[in-house]
Length: 113
Image (cartoon, rainbow, N blue to C red; front, top):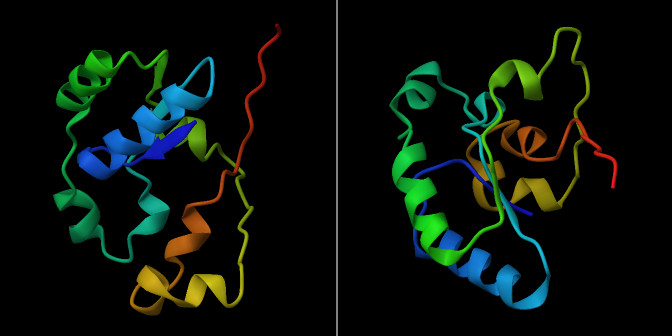
């Protein structure tokens, strides 16, 4: 699985290509995660490029594109966060308090088969 927040660039596509070389099936997620934004203005301004991103991923041969919405990722009653001390204090964590709490998966979907 290659998790992204839309606005795919070469770094994302490189991860997807590498995944395709190493495993039988590759899923890419596109979810603009509100938990990773400290400012509602920043969240509102973040590019939503699902159609363009889907086209790029289709050209690569990605097997499944998953586009959850906010209610699917954060259902009513959601109350789980994970904090990783040390690791989360570098990079974006130094400037965006709570940024990494929104990165870790909060819900696991399972399908039969």
